[in-house]
Length: 417
Image (tube, rainbow, N blue to C red; front, top):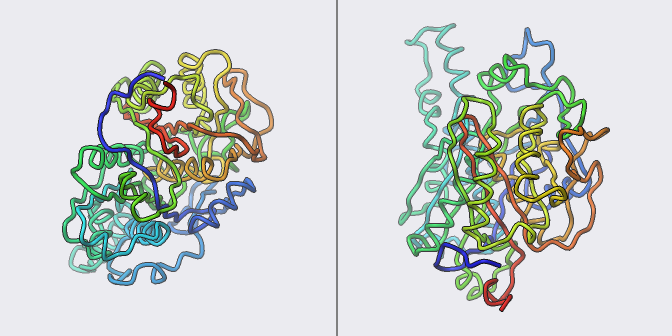
């Protein structure tokens, strides 16, 4: 194992908060990943009149008042309700007393593709029907993308806190995790609540539909007959802290955050770039001090589009050789939850390391010869996992990869001496 390029405190994940179409909370989410469950249904949160097909992955049975107790959920947009509830769930899952979190220097970093575009859909509809004079001020206040992060700080009553919403589209969750890793490594923060959140909105659905990238039925990544994405929604928020902090309070450790890589190849507005993706994976491996042969599982971006799956598969084989690690797509179950996608996948990877299993790529029938990876079709499998790679790509070549490892008491560079 090579020496990691970043020097600082070891950072671990001790809490996971999940709001997703396949479950709310870690227990439901884990059960769904093991079972290969999906919850595809016709979209109901905006008007889909005029579209030939309208399946999506909505969050169902979400009762924000169960987890949002300080703020009025009605004052928050749909995406902010997701992020705030997921943050509360992450803190509760971590066993960290709120009083301890409130007394510590904390970073809140949330990635998003659309911010509160779901609320903007409503704002436009109101303006068209009632004019500016008829707009509801509460609705206007809900449209700020910054509230995805600031609402978490306000809900948890954090005072020594820095907040930020990261707008790097579909890789934004990984960007937020990398940002938080750096803050804790170098001592700028004691704790971080980080991840991603997005809500289904007409604007993004229409954009992908016009690109002919919306599947009519289900998402089937790496399959010969794949037809595109299904738009999804939700939030994944992780609680990060230093290893010393976690050990001192006897916390359960899901995984160690070993390193990350980011790149922006700016090759094309929407098409993925093979060399840019490979470079991002290389940067993550170098930051973590991990060799390609040590990766046991890749959580792919895996959107189910022709271009993404083929390009990502080729980049993986460029770096890992003709027999790469098993490579799965959780979007086959979750749909594409945009800015929440890589954050929810990071939680899925953490659970996989803890529970020692690999979530499946569902809806799989026939592997595309242009995507020659073992995608663990349709059924989860038990596996001995030590290091997992979580990929996230976005329009404009905004790429981010996070590496997670099963917690070991010895630092990895010492364990191999």
